[in-house]
Image 1 (cartoon, rainbow, N blue to C red):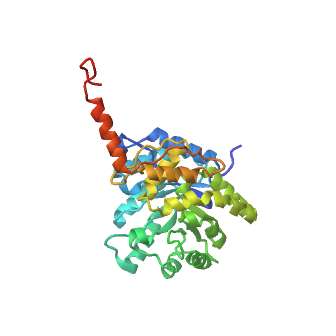
Image 2: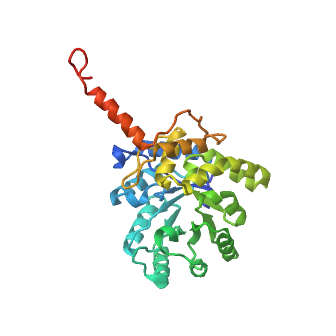
Image 3: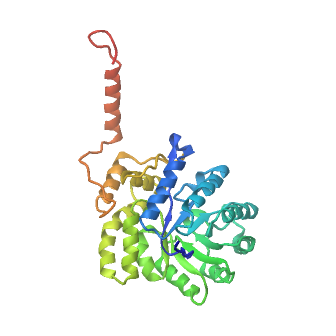
Length: 340
């Protein structure tokens, strides 16, 4: 007898990374589906497809549709699935949202209109029309540092009056704001999800019901265990585990090595044994120094940890000098007159 999976989003919702080939110009479909299986097998509570961590901003329209077409049937109801359907215009957002719902999405994550923002009145109108157009729960996506548009608590209070606006993914990094949003949700069907990885246990204690979590690509088992400790009231155990998880979460969110979140997560996920491949340009691959820093953070994880190597990182000037000398040597004739 099959077990009915709850469609509520809570706990660990992985913002799934996108494996690629061909210098980042092609989606590695087989690796992507395999990665989704690994996350589900680790016990995560939900998946977000076409996330920012999944390089949504860089995917072509046909690729976004293809990801929905292959991912949702493959997941096949094993966990709830949210799909990001953010587009610049209302018409395109509705079209993308209907496509995702038609293919089985349980919920949609939608950014407010960005770049040429229509101000508060237009943002409210945008969400109201999308909600009217689709038969699925909607998660508002509040990330003003990236979008330039803030969904304020006052706007949230108005939007939760719409039946299928069910969640707010808040990525401002303010625990006081999460508590305020959670208070607004009281007496409604709405819930708060946190999108700031380094706040995970504290956001969940402050009223968020779940994490939309990019770093969960790297450490799904640890993330699930952390939530299980918190759910069971084992606060001391949760915080002890978090001591081991926090360094890599904090590094991905902010570092001094010019490592962006997307390439950092993909590099770390590959280092723990998953097939991720390159990022799509203009995202940049991580440097040698950053790989050592990531390795150091990963070495603390109890399940998805890696061994710290004894490799040393060289400044680029030293590396370049070595490379030049090696290639020059390779081009010189040997005693027989042949070049190596």
